[in-house]
Length: 199
Image (cartoon, rainbow, N blue to C red; front, side, top):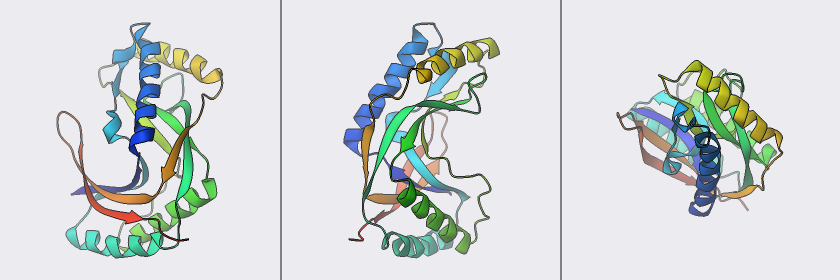
């Protein structure tokens, strides 16, 4: 089974993130460009701490014990969802995201311990640096390159206007999730929930 470790959006933040996603989509729709991207359903949005890929039942059990030990050292903390960005660049955007700010020390330390836990149960080290974000859309496979470039120009101009008001995101737990890939999009199932309980 394919799995990952993440922080889920709470309902209040989810509603505000959905509105922000709709604002971005509307900006593109006004120019007939909304269909250049496949838009992520808000219920599937999460902050990935570590994508694991294929995971055995034994690894799942071992991870549960290690993640329980990791979260014992952390109390709840707050993040803020900020403005729109993209990977890899505005001239050819493939992934649209909303940035994550706040509690960088706590989030970075937590992610590093999750990474260590993954390695301890047999996963190869993640070579890419941790870049916290919420994916709101991905480029359609059949997207026209000129339309892709025009969409990037519009969104770059939007981003250049400055950061919108931040969306508060209280973090109280992390989850180990299973991802089943389906034609209509992935289906996520929670395998384990680990609450941040340190004082």
